[in-house]
Amino acid sequence: MTSGQPEMILNGRVSSMAGIDPSINALDYVRDRGFTGAKEGCAEGECGACSIIVLRPDTDGRSRWTAINACLIPALTLDGQEVVTAEGIGTPDDLHPVQREMAVRGGSQCGYCTPGFICSMAAEFYRPDREAGGDDSEEHGANGFDLHSLSGNLCRCTGYRPIRDAAYALGDADESDERVTRLSSPAPEGAATSVEHHYGRFVRPTSLDEALSIISGDEDAVVVAGSTDWGVDVNIKGVRAPLVVAIDRLAELRGFEMNDDVVELGAALTLSEAERLLDGRVPLLAQLFPQFASRLIRNGGTIGGNLGTGSPIGDTPPALLALEADLVLAGPGGERAVPLADYFTGYRQTVRDPVELIKAIRISLPLSGVTAFHKIAKRRFDDISSVAVGIALDIDGGVVKKARIGLGGVAATPIRATATEQALEGKSWTAQTAAAAGEVLGGEGTPMDDHRASARYRAATLRTSLPKLFAQTTEEVAS
Image (cartoon, rainbow, N blue to C red; front, side, top):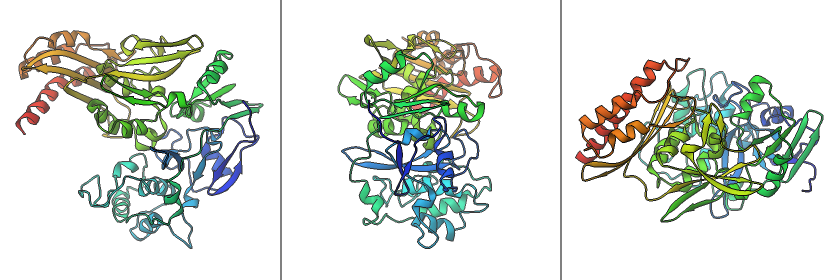
């Protein structure tokens, strides 16, 4: 791999990243260059004050302006990329439509969060498939603006109504706008990057084989994609690594296939990309995506990363367990497929060898006809789950022929609720069956007391999941 001097296109100009500490995040980098609109509020990706916009690939060779949390990603992951901060969107003498609407409708109070809102709002303003004329509602404007695009931005002054008013007042982007015309051509490829620093080394390989070779040769290597997990450790705990390997742009990890037999999602696809590619065709995942953190996190975080951490409270494992997904693991010796049910071995421990990477997630078709994803958390959106339940049932003639249930937050690992599955299979799908199986579900796992929920609460929420699903399926049939 060859490497020139790392640089990004920052607000339309080349900005060198030569000699920077590999642990420096994108937020500190842009602020050090005078673009101080982006702020550090939480350093965990929950407040959005740090939002910036990056040009990312879309379908058919086009691009998409994408808002991400600058506080989480190493600046060097943006080598060769086009980045825009709030200062690059417009100026006091030439306000962008987003900035103008925020100003005239009182969307800025103390102003600390405003640049982050501006960036997230501008990314939605330029969304290629945003169309006016939609149904005006609490969460979607008649101009096609999806308010969920701002779900990762926090206003401490509680000025949400004027911010919403500004979002819903936006018209269409002018076709002559350079950021609109830029969408018609591909986003930059991931640059080959290799930076040595006395604090550590950063490498972006250009192929999967190269990535596997690098991590095989260094047991201390930390692999990052969206860095939504590792970035928190860097910011809050001061964790550093002697070698960071970025794999987010590897083509071999970004594939997508859907045919009559299988759905295969590349592990380095972001949650937002997977959501767009699937377009609702896997209903259980379609229920999951809006509840997974915030749009800002989903724009950066990857499916493989959520599984790779081995966390017992990750949102994707319960749903993927219910879908009986397999993981494709790639290593120096080749590839192997592992059922997700066999993947987790202990708290943040898995069967994946340190020299292997998750290449893809594979879901066999056809899908079960009745599915649900229930997430219990303290907030409706942008929160970590106390309990998560993925359910997939095959019901034929009113009888449950097959049941698969995945659970998160009730044991040291995500688990399959096998006792509950057995209690359902072969039974008529009735309120009584759902209630009886719910009692079994309440005893699954080894829930514990912690700051998110008590063990009793977790068990109680489990008991309600199947009766809730039965009520929902009854309502759907009745309607």
